[in-house]
Length: 631
Image (cartoon, rainbow, N blue to C red; front, side, top):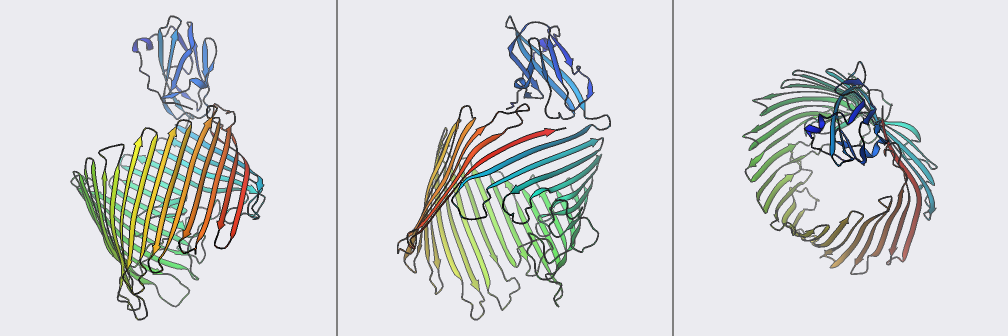
């Protein structure tokens, strides 16, 4: 609806004010107004149909209230505080271009430079017109409304943000937890920040996200608080969150100094040698309850702590980058049993960089069998390394990779050691931009050693070759991919397999029409039984718009055929989704965008081996709209 413009200013015309009078706001003034009314009067006859008005780089011409010799604009959304520029361009009756630049400054209130609430309301109502599915889980009608709100206050060096999402949901059938009918707060986050000179502070309270190091807290989303202090090259972070998942207003702020059902942490860092060396230390401690939505739990509580140390370096303009992490944990997976907590360690070393057209990276990592961090689901009991390298010679691009990992890092005699090795070479050729080519070769080995008595050995070798070629011309894109894979089982079970895949994808785009059909064939042969299973998949995505985009038609579908040459498998499935939408008239300067549409779902499955079939379809009448608003 809006477009960005950069209009060259005619300095001579901008000095001429005899043809235009700015009624509001006054030029080069500072006003206290969130939605300032803009009103301009022409002092000489002009061609109104040539009028172009740009506000802060956005064309607002279509939103103006235009009269014979003046125009007026009242913003629907709050303008940000600060400087604003209006550029008015029009032609007089003699065909001369007239242009004027108008500047003014706004504040949101007398006390605050910025005080604004930006919101977006989305509403969807769905009514089931026809249903052949006997399931009682499909509601006849449902309504969902979501309100996203971002609120900001700023004065001097201080700023405060309150972001929240509310939802109203209702339907004529029961909901599965944690969904509830009615109005509920989905999440909320209050942020306060202060900045002056080298000192910066930021505090988050609510539904926070915490990221520290890969082996301590790679990602933690909980209710609580995070407080970050920075002075120059020094950083200190404190956090306290509830370990069980809570939603909405339940659970309060989530901040506590006790580790009961909470996770506490502190980290500190410093940057040295012009930010080429970063040092970081972290300590995390806490406890998880026996039950917590979204978290795997054991009969008793889980409790532990971890110390972590991280050093990162970047020398010679990213030619030599390195990272070293060392962590020590104490963890009790079940405080209700008689076993004590167990200590273990993890460490990781990475070195890499860029040398002209080349890049490289080597990583060695070790995670102990009993290494664990409260609130995290880290992979453990593994040791190994990964090497990647690449080269770019213009139209030629080459990437290589090799890795080797094993479990059972403590050589437990009761368990085998599983070793996974993999190497690959990928090459791409792009001399002809319309016909890019990609080739790859991969070798993977999964084997076991030191198997205890009664444990069958593992020795699988898989070789894969694949290629892709595309044709790209204007709005047409055609791609063909194929791969051949052979898995050689060198154990006595001899379960060798061959997998061949062919796929063809196409797409064609026009402003009012697009279509993307595809076809793939997956052939999997089990050499032990001498049975080959073929899977055919056909998909299509199509969209067409009519009447200046007021009406749109969407079609997507998938058809699958699965057949085994011994007759043990023979089934087909068809899934089709249809949408026919009509955009209703917009309101509030085009911000309210209601849409009404028919949606249909069709599904059919057929099994010729067991002579069964099932067919269902649903037709819905849907109304949806969104409205952003601010104050």
